[in-house]
Length: 272
Image (tube, rainbow, N blue to C red; front, side, top):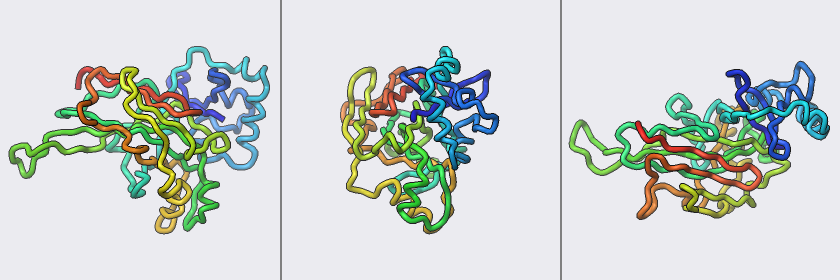
C-alpha cells in the first residue's frame, strides 16, 4: 500500500496512491474512527485498520468517488524523532527542517557547498523495550525515501580566521509516499540520485551491515522505541555529497528515486 499525506484545506490529510491517483483514505473507508492523518495511522494501526484500508481501495467505486483532484503532497509524516542508522543517534527535529515532495530548499546562510545523501528511511509503528529482532521487524510500519542535507561553511575556532570548511546536517526531506512492508524489500531496491536530470549516483543499499530490525532491537535494549520514529539507512554506497568536480548549486533540482516509493524532488533556492 502506498500511503501519502496531502493538503486538504490547509490541514494534513491521509491519502493513498492507486494507479497514480491520490484517494482520500478516511473517506474511502467511511468509518468515523478511521485515522485522518498519517501520524494517527502510524500510532493506531492495530487490529483491522489496515485491512479496512486495503478493502476500501480494492473497490473501484470508492476510489473513483474519493479521488482527490490536483492534490498537493506534503511530507508524509512528521517524525517524533530521527535516528541516524549507523549509530542510532537521535537528532532533534527542532534543529533540522523537514521537507516534503517538491518543496524548495532555501540555501543556508554562509554555506559554501550543499550535500545530500540518498537514504531509505524506516518508520516505526510499534513500540516497546528490549524488543527481539522478530518483534522489531513487526514494529516497522513502512518505508520512504530520505534526503539527508548538509552544508559546508567556513570553520572558525574561538573567533579565529576560517580554517577550512566544516559540514553540518541542517535538514531532511521525506517522501513522496510511505510503502508498507508487504510491498517493499529494502535490500533489493534500486536507488538513483539525479541532479538536473543527470544521474550522479545509482545502486542499492549495502545489506552487509545490520538490518532495520536489528538496529531497532539494539536501540530498544537501552531505551523505549516509540511510534513515529524515523530511522535513516545511511547513504547507499557513497551516496553523493560534494563529489570530486561536482557541487550542488543554487537553483538545482535534486531527484531521489526508489522502485516502488517513487521520486522525491527538491529544488534548491536561488537565495538564502
